[in-house]
Image (tube, rainbow, N blue to C red):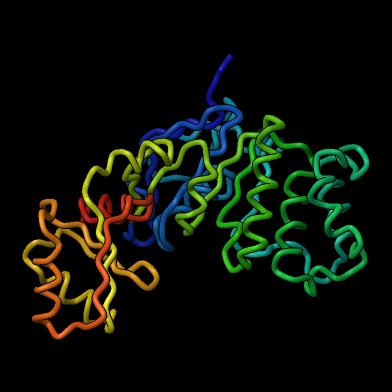
Amino acid sequence: MNKQSVIVKNLSKSYNNKVALNNISFEVKKGELFGFIGPDGAGKTTLFRILATLLIPDEGSAIVESFDVIRDYKSIRKIVGYMPGRFSLYQDLSVEENLKFFATIFGTTIKENYELIKDIYVQIEPFKNRIAGKLSGGMKQKLALSCALIHRPKVLFLDEPTTGVDAVSRKEFWEMLKKLNEKGISIIVSTPYMDEARSCNRVALINNGEILSIDTPENIIMQNDQDILAVKTNDLYKLILDLRSYEKTDTAFLFGEYVHLCPIKPFKDLVLLEEYLQSKQHHDIIIKKIKPGIEDCFMKLMKRSI
C-alpha cells in the first residue's frame, strides 16, 4: 500500500518566461496536515492548481493518491477537495443551494455526508437561506470548506484559506482542520501567516518558486542555533536601517514593534550594540535575547537563497 498521498518530483512551471515553480520535489504522507508557508508570489497557488488538475506543469510529475495529474485528471477530481484563495462559490445562490449544487455534481447528497461537515456547517446552518455573497468573511470560509468536503474527499487542497479573515475566525478554522485531519483526510494547506505553521505536522518553506526547507515546525526552529535579539527604539524605521548597516549584523527584519537582529557572531556584551545605537541618536533603547521563531528561520533561509 502506498503510504504517500502526494508525490511531486522536479515540478516546474513558468508564465511568459517568469518562473513560478522551479524544479520542486516533495511528498505528503497519507493523513498528514502539511503546510506551504511563504509570501505572495512564492508559487503556492500555481502548485495547488497543478495538484488540483487545473494547470499543466511544464516539467516534472505530480501524483495524487496514485493518480497522475495529467493522465488521470478525471479520477483525481473525484477524490480531492479544492478551496481556492478567493471565494469562488455562487454569490447569488443561498448557503444551502451552494451546498446542494456541489453535492449533486459529485453524485451525493448533504444528508449522505452530513456527519463529515456537521461541525463546520452547523455554524452557518441558521443562515442557510442567506445569499452567499452577503455572508461575512468567516462564514464564506466555512461554506467554501463545507462545499469542498461534501463528497468526502481523500485529499483536501486549501489555498490560503484564512487570508483576509479575522484572527478569531482563523483560529476556529485551524481547529476545524485538525478535527478533519483526525478523520484521516490528507490536508495540504498554504498560508502567508507564519504562526499557522505551528499547527501543521510538517511544513515546506517556499519562496520564489523554490522550497527552502521541509521539516516539522519544531525541527526547523531547532536548526536555527543563532542568537536572536529583539531590539526597539524611539524610531523603528531608522533603527532597521542602522542595524542593517552595522558591521556585526547578519540579518535584521521588522517583527511588530521590534526588529529581530541576527548577529554574525554571538554578542558577548550587549553594551556594544547599545553604544552603537546611541551613537546613531536612538533613544528609549530596549535589547533582549529571544528564542527564534519560524519567521526568523524563514528569513534566514530566504537570505541564503538570494
